[in-house]
Image 1 (cartoon, rainbow, N blue to C red):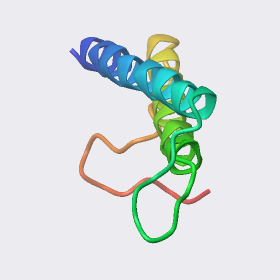
Image 2: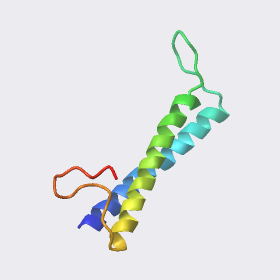
Image 3: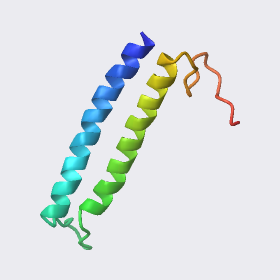
Image 4: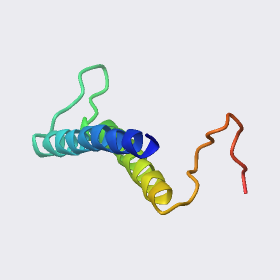
Length: 85
């Protein structure tokens, strides 16, 4: 069940990451600017969001590979906090 949940999460977050990459690239190509008192190119805040979503997809993939290879995942399953070491 855990591998199924991780796989579904990777598909969902991966799709969101792909969409963010495409959206950021299109904003860069079309030179879209934010509306407001200070015009900022939209690709700058979108790039930060894209980096975060891609990092989450990589973290999920890492946990799935660890779980499938018989290791322990990096998140707690018994309600305790993971160690900092």
